[in-house]
Length: 173
Image (cartoon, rainbow, N blue to C red; front, side, top):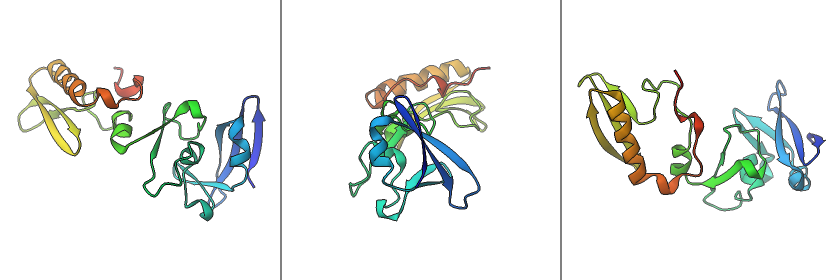
């Protein structure tokens, strides 16, 4: 069984990786405690999962009760912390929705999603992938124009898919 620490209206579930070399704590709402404590939880990488009888459901899938479906839904942690499994921090969505709301990649050179420097054209390019199709917003001498173009693409293709505005999609310089 996992160690449980009650903290007012929430609880922490303490669990270990499969080698018992590292411990982590997941935060849950107190009303989910009875369901959660019936299972043994462990983690691998950033995924918290239960014993084999749960078919390796993630903690978020278990909390949001979407682990039983054959086509499992994905669960996004709004604040980006996979250990914060309070319902107010979890959103169920599609892979496309989750990628839209993801953080900026560490190798991004422009500081904005979908805007990159094209070495062959020596210009800033704007693009967006929607339903597996890459949509070009054009290439520009000025980075700001490419950013504006990317924002227009987002308005066309993504606005209806966003869960919430992410503050961390732009790098501060």
